[in-house]
Length: 364
Ligand code: AMP
Image (cartoon, rainbow, N blue to C red):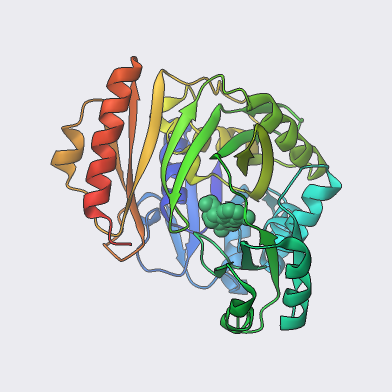
């Protein structure tokens, strides 16, 4: 069986690493000569809309998936006409436009921050009369890791903020003074079988995920599952999905979902019975899904910008290092480390040590 992946970065790399024990082969399409997954798979080097390469990918792969959601809609559709594509292009279409995504949440009675569509300065001024400050202006498309976003603190800022969006269709949403950010990761098979991972509690800085910690028996687990199952069923979804949520006063508000394996689930490699990467493969190949149970206390720390020193990272007890085969670059996720321990004391100590290492190499 050969699995095709659009994108050959670290997520594709970790999917391939999870697939080898299952006897799978991989083929990735990625414009970079060298990327995280290229050493582990056949590599079609070119643009995502290159018809010839897409035809080759569709021909060689038994099933195609992707590692990022900004795949052009035409590309996903073209592939779906020639081979199986999971998750299906409709999930991409919703996830890649923040306005469609928020409207979709509302149709499914999934609560969100208040929001409004913005296509002009007048729209923004009008929306802010109802929303109140602070708020966040976000481009509808192509936003990730806090890119294409401006926090609005007062009306004097509106003209400048709108100018900075360079006229792109946007949404403005109320700033949520959340107590926690959490995400729920789930996998669904074509038959409708679903498994949920324990909630992950996520810490961001400058819009970038820094730390994700597994929360076994979290009081909000059931609420989060009730939200994500609505998405999975409405989209007739197949594969791993990640839904990012804000916790405020015991309630959950949805921020966005990712139709792919997710950074907040990297702890599942060592920290869960079956990793999100393996369960993604099992789901898209219509194989029985694996247990999502956590194996003790577990969490993950991202390394941003500079590569960690392997010796220092691996000298931390219970730590596992994952390098992405990427060079150092400001603000770039280049590696992560997981910690898994039987006692909460050992876990907390190792996690803190990892956080200190990550802060020392961080240049964002
Ligand atoms: P996003 O690109 O929408 O995932 O936003 C990146 C990060 O910005 C989130 O993980 C939050 O930390 C923060 N953020 C985004 N939207 C809001 C909001 N409406 N209220 C408060 N913080 C937000």
